[in-house]
Amino acid sequence: MNKLAAFLGATAIVAATSSAAYAARTDLVLGVVLEPPHLDPTAGAAAAIDEIVYANVFEGLTRIGPNGEVQPALAESWEISDDGRTYTFKLREGATFHDGTSFEAEDVKFTLERAMADDSTNAQKVLFSAIESVEAVGPVTLKVTLEHPQGSFLYNMGWGDAVVVAPETADGNKENPVGTGPFKFENWAKGSSVTIVKNPDYWGEPVALDKAEFRFIPDAAAAIPALLSGDVHAFPMFPPDAVTQVQGDPRFEVVIGATEGETILATNNGKEPFSNLKVRQAIAHALDRDEIIMGASNGFGVPIGSHFSPANEAYVDLTGTYPYDVEKAKALLSEAGYPDGFSGTLKLPPPAYARQGGEVVASQLREIGIDLEIVPVEWAQWLEQVFTNKDYDLTIVSHTEPNDINIYARDDYYFNYDNDVFDAVIEELDRVSDPEKRNELYAKAQRIIAEDAVNGFLFQLPKTGVWDAKLEGMWENMPIQANDLTGVRWAE
Image 1 (cartoon, helix red, strand yellow):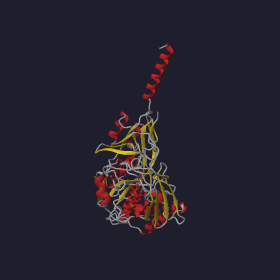
Image 2: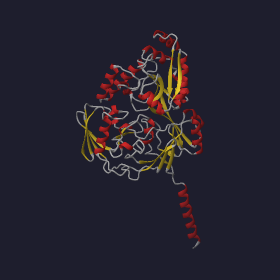
Image 3: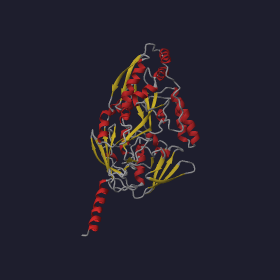
Image 4: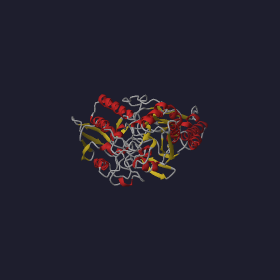
């Protein structure tokens, strides 16, 4: 071999080695705060379910994009009848479930009718209440007829609660989720992590990641060393009180975005003394939102005065409805018949915004004579005691479902709130498609529950994202309770 050939050969080897050394990695470890109770988004209210499987493992007819927009998913396109009642969907041809069975219109019909059924366990059954009938016209054609026009129908079909499941595997999705998404479920190490892997038979554009692990890391004490050591590459929701410890570190990107999480002091309106409007107004006047936001989210939250996201174009700033006024709060308590105050319980689920924010709220209410016993509960206990059985006085929770002010009109909801005027507004909203009219109705709905002081409206939960600076495609905001990995990749 002459010298030139030897040199070129050596150069080729170095180039190949260098290329291999700098090839973009295809694995990802995400730190998430909560472990889900199960993995079926059509059978549970916990946001932690959708945060793992939405858009990754399961898909719906539509999906919610990073800016809150409705996008096609398993429905490639659709036509709407002139009267706004009939939607004819053209479905994706060639899509399959992870067990190899084909995806067809009959699967969507099964999914929707299952969600609508009398014995449905779907936590958002109301999403399907306007559906009159579902017909599989052909393998890839579906016709849905509504009882009345519904402006939010396509948006509703993009919720995690509306993802499509197959009749063959639906009953097993809590432990072994089978969807049509770009990732397949691989393993759930209880108490530790959930792992998903690339679906080689995906109908759409392949994802860049071969494997993603959602690791459960509930507190800042564990999150910081996990990030700094590289054991975890990304935290979609990094503990707010730890953000300052990584800001300015060039290894990481820190992105403070918005969520749909209205963080509230949820109140049992059906239980004395909280059924008394003046008591609820007194509580509202006693809440110093700025102090709560600092204690619960290190100052990153945005104050709210009703159950509505400030990022929504229909938002009305109602934070001045009951301004912070301790003396006014005491006077209202006295007028309500509680001049010496009263005692109660404050049940707090695990997230820091609840546990830390709860300490601040309890201190503030103590100033007006309301003595609260703080009761820490795990999520399973919260879902059973508070959400299902309504066995509580007060609690703190973020409602992260998108655009969900209609929950205040639901019968037997855990707030125990009942207002016929509000219900009528929501009923009208459900039938209106005109954006301007819908915004007017949203504003009216916000004012009613703000004036009724149904709950203590605290702040909009911030999305405190922290991840490796080489990662691309992580969502800045969280318009739906999800960690969508379909566009995530490592920079080469």
